[in-house]
Length: 155
Image (cartoon, rainbow, N blue to C red; front, side, top):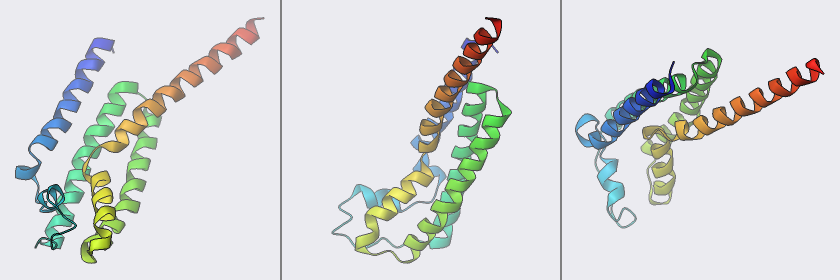
């Protein structure tokens, strides 16, 4: 695929991530958004429906993950990288979601920052920002090693 179509595709997908972020208050139930914008250390925890919050966080994670995986696929067109990324996103969810679940049900003042960061990792596409440069570097190293090996065979 030509580079300009890849860039347009990635730009479109990033636009979708931006739209999710822009319309987060109308698309998802998350009373913690306003809670963390205010002086949360002085406030009492907001009233919220824990099950509804967990479902919305999981749904938002799924949306961001699908778009992030699409970005990775458009950037590299490699099914092995896509499978590996899918496994990493699944591992991230399996580690972070139970921790988030625990913090939601045992919310206390000393856990606010931990809840904030675990929630942030689940609802924002931070992982794709880490994976894209990592896979790009991996590609560069692989190509360099292949070029060196082919040069050595010729000589």
